Amino acid sequence: MPSENTNISGGTLRHVRARAPGRVCLIGEHTDYNDGLALAMAIAEGVTVDARRIEPASHGGGQRVRAQAIDLGESDEFALSDPRPAPGWRAFVRGTVAELQHVGLRPVGASLRIHGNVPRGAGMSSSAALEIALALALLALAGTADEIDRTELAKLGSRVENEWAGARTGLLDQLTSLYGEAGMALRIDFQTLRIDPAPLRLDGWRLVTLDTGERRSNASSGYNQRRAECARACELLGVRSLREAGEEQLEQLPPPLRERARHVLSDNLRVDSAVQALRAGDLPALAELLNASHASLRENLQVSTPTVEAAVARMLDAGAAGARLMGGGFGGSVLGLLPPGVPMPAGGLEVHPCDGARVLEG
Ligand code: GLA
Image (cartoon, rainbow, N blue to C red):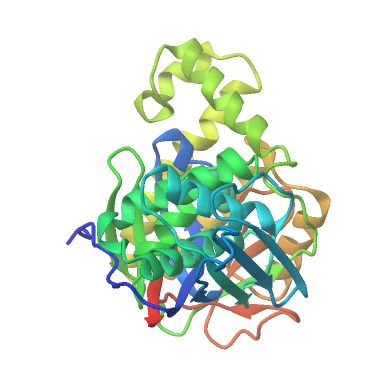
């Protein structure tokens, strides 16, 4: 059954705790901003925000937002009425406050303690987890949670990435973090924003990520360039998105736009093949799809690096039946599918499909 858009419950509270998960994308990369398909899951690792209302200073200083990034030992403070751009993690806090204001959701002055256990900048959506946990906490404090549904909240998070962090990312990370379900992978159609959960029955196989240690933010890597190339391919083909393009049209495109589009069209097809493989309990077929997706990400989209290739090779050498780079590329983590009994490579993290973002306490 498709997920309904659901409101985020919460009233006007003095203290709340919200948690949002990171995500693992099983298949379908760089498809989200092309109105394509992806199969992804929320994971146990995520970001927690403890938010406490701060009353306006009695001497008329106006409402303030104070934020502490516990894991980094850093803090930030700004006037609620005037969140200005800032680099690093502060961009996400200020951007989330500003975007909530832009849509009239009236965040209040707050002290925010942020901590998490999703590897940062590792292709597992630490930034989406941060935006979404912040937004849920601020909405619950303000008592405006019922005024926005989860899909609109995902779009708000994506605007924070686009406008405040300079990454022209799509909706994959935010939708997965918000709609995750324990035991389920989500087939997301970015043209309709329909989400179909599909049971993830692994029968002893394991999904494992391996951090390459290579860090390039989506804002500074070739991510935005790939998005621009896909947009240019659409212009040349006269289509609104690559979802409308047929394989037979791709020959009209010059390189490398032809290869970029080929990746997107083929990964869309692999998403539905992966759903079928899961339904049939055919894990070797899923592993082959991971390998095929990686080959396309490397050859057609060209978002791999020597360090990523080395990590994929380590995963396969350790006995994974399939492995591929995950997320935007240019570093981050790789995902492997290990048959029963195969030990994890050193430094690997086993991931499980978990529930989506929520307000935990108020
Ligand atoms: C990053 C972006 C997503 C998506 C993936 C690639 O995670 O934030 O929007 O484009 O890369 O699939």
